Length: 76
Image 1: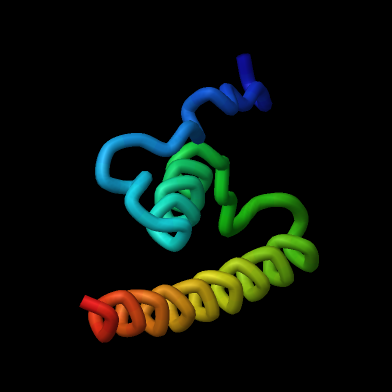
Image 2: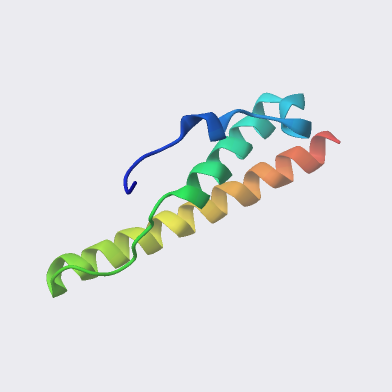
């Protein structure tokens, strides 16, 4: 069934339950693995805007995840 989200898959388990940060990471990775993140498509004008916004979003997410990982490493 397209568009259906099984939210039971977002239940945090294993070592991800040890901290709030790791639980948030687990949920984010689960969500990213399940969504249809389309980088192109549609007509030319909206497709270009979609690709640009997707690239910017991925860039920001990668930057923030690097900061998060560095913060976790500093605590251990």
